[in-house]
Amino acid sequence: MAFKDRDLTDIHSFTTDEVMFILDKAVEMKRALAAKDVSRYRLADGKDLLAALLFYENSTRTRTSFEIAAMRLGMRTTGFSSTEGTSVKKGESLRHTLDMYEAYLCDAVIMRHPLDGSARFAADHLHVPVFNAGDGKHEHPTQTLLDLFTIREHLGRLDNFDMGIAGDLKYGRTAHSLAIALAKFEGVRLHLFSHHVLALPDVLMEMMKEHGVEVTIHERLDEMAGATDIMYQTRIQKERMPDLSEYDKAKSMSEFTGAMIGKTRDGFGLMHPLPIDKAAPSISSSLDGNPKALYKVQAGNGVPTRLTELALSFGLLGDDFDGEEWKDSDLNGDFFEDLKVEDRPVRTDVSIRPLRKNGVVIDHMRPYMEDVLVRMLKVRERGDIYRAATVRALSRPESIKGMLMIEDREFTQEELRAVAAISPGCTVNTIKEAKVVRKLRLKLPAVIENIPHMACSNKGCISRSEHLESVKPVMRRAGDEKVRCHFCDQLMTSAEIV
Image 1: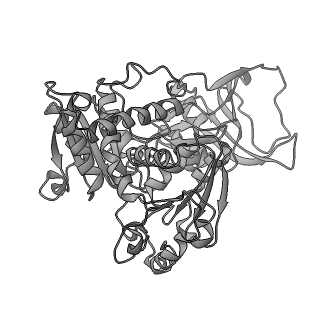
Image 2: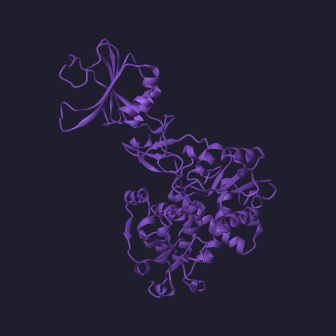
Image 3: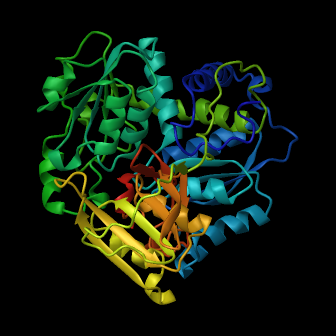
C-alpha cells in the first residue's frame, strides 16, 4: 500500500496522483461525517491506536482538528498543547522528548515545532508515522491538503485558475507549502503580494520557475483581488520578524477590505489559514459573513482531511490506490570518474612547485577554497607537508583556480567524498615516484554528511549547532553545484555549507 506507515512531513514528497487520491477519500469522509455514518469513518475501532500531539507552539485549529479527527477515527490522543509544565522547560532536547513517546508505544506523532526541519528529523528518528503540524517557517503540509480540498470544493478543479497569495510570504509556512503544491497542477497562475521584506523566498520562486508556473508580482492588494479566482490571505507574523520597524508598514498594506470584495470575479473565494489577528487584521471583520468568505468552511475541512491522512498512514484506507507513487531520489551512484593518465614530463614553468615524490594534488578547485580543504582534511593537525595557492590556469590565463598539494598522503574514500562535496569539478591526482598514477574528476555526491564544520545556511534549521539539538547536518544534491538541506530544504551552493 502506497500510504501505509507513511510520514507527512512535507508536501513535495507526494505525487499529484497521491494528492488527488487523498482529496477524493477526504470527500467521502466529509460526507460520512455529515451523515453521522459511523461505520464509514470510525475505522480504528478496537485497534488501540494512540497518537501523541506534541505542540511546542500555540495552536487552536490544527491541534483541535487533529484531535477530533483522531477521535472520530477511533483513536486516542495524548501529548501537550504548549511547553509549559513539560521537561522542555528543563532543557530537554527534541530527540529525548520523541524517545519518551516512542518508549510509551505511541503509534503516531503529530508535531508542531519552532525549528525548520524538525518534522523531518522526527520522521528519521522515530519508527512510527510523523505528521508535520508546522515546523518553523518551513512547511505545513496538512494545512495545504485542507487548502487544496477547499479550493477544489469551491472551484470544482485544481488546474487552470488564478491563485493569489498575500501577506507574509517569507515566514508563512502555509504559503510555502501551498505554493509548492500548486506547482503540481497544470495551468495554475500564481499572483503574489507582500511588503518587500516579506516576499516569497528565492528558493521557492526558483521552484515555481522550474515547474513552469506563471508568477505575477502585484504592487497593490486591491489590484490583485480583481485578478484572481482564489485569494489566500495570511497573517503578518510579528513574532518571526527580526526588524519590527517594518511590521507596521507591512500590516497597514495587507488588509483585505470590504471595498476589495466588490472588485472580485464571480465565483471568487477568500481563504485564510487563520487565526486573523484582531489588532492587525489581514481580512476585515465585515467580510466574515460574506458568501465569498471561505475560511470557516476551510477550517472545518481540517477534520475530514486529517482523518483521511491518519487512516491512510495506518493502512485503514488506500488499498485501492493505483496511481503514480512517490519515489525518493537515487542516493547512490559514483561521485568520481577515472580519467586517462598521460605520461608527461614534470612541469617547471609553474607558479607552485610540483610534487617530486609521493602524495596527492587537488587541481581545478574553486578559487580560494584551499584553506577550507586544509582545515577539513586536517592537514596541519597531521603535520603534513603541503603547498596551496590560487593560480592562473596555464591553458586559460584569464581563469583562476585553486590547487592543493600534500606530500606523502593518500585519500580515503570518505576524504574524497568530502573534497567532492566542497569543490565539485576538481581533479585529484595520486602521485607515485613523481608520476601521476591515477587521476579522478570529482562530482557532487548525492548525499553529503559527516563533513567537518558543515552547516545549513538557514539559521532556523534544526541542524544548526546553536540550537543544541545534536542534529548532524545532511545535504542532498540539487544540481551540479547546488545542495539542499535534508531537513529544512534550504538551497545552497556547495561552497556555502562550510
